[in-house]
Length: 136
Length: 316
Image 1 (spheres, rainbow over the protein chains, first blue to last red):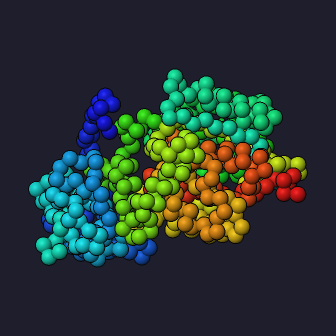
Image 2 (cartoon, helix red, strand yellow):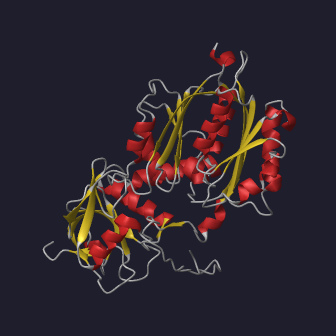
Image 3 (cartoon, each protein chain N blue to C red):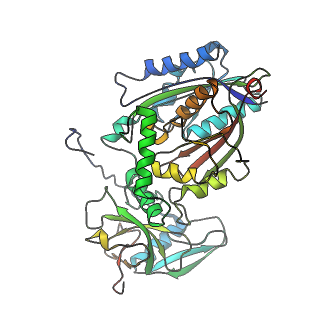
């Protein structure tokens, strides 16, 4: 992406509105109440957001802390939530991609503890952003 | 029945201006000429296209690949999958001669990469990760784990660039096209013969968090005999994924010596260029027993591994 090349760098933000389904709706409602839930199945273990394997499963509380596995500046986002990170939420078996709110990416190191920051007032939110845990 | 490569040609340029039609047709003509075949003798045409780059237009314009009036298949995932389909159609007796064609104008992505991923379309989380973002995270993860160094990545990219462009000037994208003619292998075939094929695929984000292509290549080649390989060609979208894929194949004599791979990436059809280069080298008495590994997807997470051996005439 370069202005020098004369490229019109436009960004479209389409508006989507549809059902998140049975599992997804339950997960999102809980998240907007400040709880992180994982969906536990025999084949995948605990996943968040929930992955429907077709098997019977159960909801388990997970987080709010998570371990940072990898991160990188996200060139598609221009807010302070500018870091895309792969994290392992405490209690989950599968990894999750999230945004991390931080001013200086240099402070983010693999293995450090992050904590969920719930935005309960944002009706569009489907997953919390994360930030460096106070104790890290 | 086995499938052998009897003709191949390719063109790669930093940028091809004025449309691809003439270039694609010229490459097909050269491949068919080498195979001593006319387009009328082709039973099946297979094109390679990605649904994020040119997957809509390639099938629409398949007539320029010679598909008009013939059995036609578009494979919208990878060159490896398309080659697998071509080989399977010959092995199954559905076709005797297959023309495999792919092209792409990826140079436009250097200015603005329109490929982005919501990563989770079901929940529509607006992560908006671009391909470059995902690749950077993967590369950083591999470096953090001590599996690669920046110096190794730069050296590999420079070597690939030398092969493609004749100079160490790494670039991400270019334009290109390649055509491969496959036939039912006969007694006097000299061309490379496709043997075992292994595949492995992961979602955009591997659930176990492991972004190392070596693991996926290990899966795809688990049943292969890799001792004594004369060559291994790996083609992915980045130097780091190619290096990790090569780490999965021990004892390689010639690693990525022909195709140039990531430094000549013009879209998902790019590994066809490696096949064309291997075919040319084999015809000049080069190595004829080896492995091609296609690492499709932004992280190289869709692996196709194909073993090649020499035709009867050369093997004798």
